[in-house]
Length: 480
Image 1 (cartoon, rainbow, N blue to C red):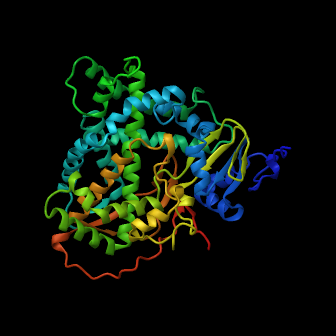
Image 2 (tube, rainbow, N blue to C red):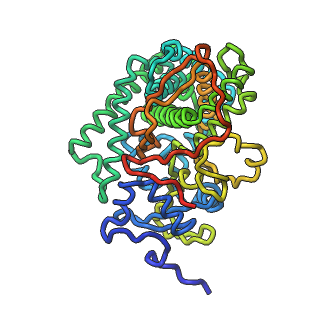
Image 3 (cartoon, helix red, strand yellow):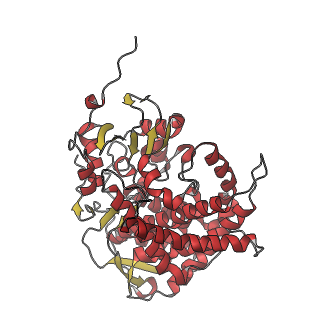
């Protein structure tokens, strides 16, 4: 005899406000709320956001079931679909079903290892161009610098265009879109995008500027402009193996916007937080500089050097463990289902937070400590697979994962080969939990040319990562 389904009220989790649910807690401190849910209610916590039923899963085995073994029972969650559809359309991130599978097959060759190797020349050239403008003793906003650099790389590799002179305009458009995401999330009843409000007008104006530039490039390529090995050229030439069809202009636009946003925003944030951690722990900068010097000497690191830049890779891994650019993954259950010991009612938004899982002391010793040397082969072999998932996972995992790791590792090595970065402001950097985990203020750091500095001897034990704050609200370390 089947046991009765538990009612939503009997499931463990914070009750929240009778009308708004836990929306006020999420608005005040999203990451703190998720951390508290896991600490108080364990690996499955149910809650409401307005009228929508949600749950947070925090055990790697359950996360793997949702993303991999039971993935057909789930679709992308409501928030991502509703808030990001006007910008991303039916690009790979939001598409579903057979249409998604067809697009994935068409796009996959653009992220083959040989194709990524071809992109690294642009990565190195643009990084060297940035460093040539830096001076000894100069202050720099490292987040703005990384946004500008990764946007230039995305422009060159995805579109074969120079975006340097248009950085401010494009960056402003993306900032407007990010603010719109946060604004919409603050309302228990989302306002449809077609309603003529001032906020919707700003959103469509920002998207319109991006669309105008992208459609112009598509028209030029289709009209016979020389095509190279960039992402857009490859997509225009791609044909479905089953029916020989290519992509429509609208499909091209949606995929280019998706990859452009994902291809620079997440990597820029990952590098920014990693540089912040390194500035707080300068001993690791010295170690990286020694490794890069031993591997490449005075040359610029290349794809061929990556296997030898093992410390650089461990530092990138550790940076994304503590500050994952994608801090939450969401799915919506299409049917009532059982995931491990947990019942998930139909149409529940299932959330899995990298921020929470990556800082869980069950999987990581001293989890708040920045310690790249924890990433030994033995530790990786013993770690549950989904105790570390900065790129999501399963069939819907990030298609550009290898591109992002290659780019982040090369840029980290290239910068620290030439400069040391030190903090100007030592107060904790607040975070914006919008589409990605962004710093909420400038990350001002001072540059020191390595050739001009007499190196000091630092201690070998890294301090605990300072408590961060989310949009001005204190975020305390996970209590033990």
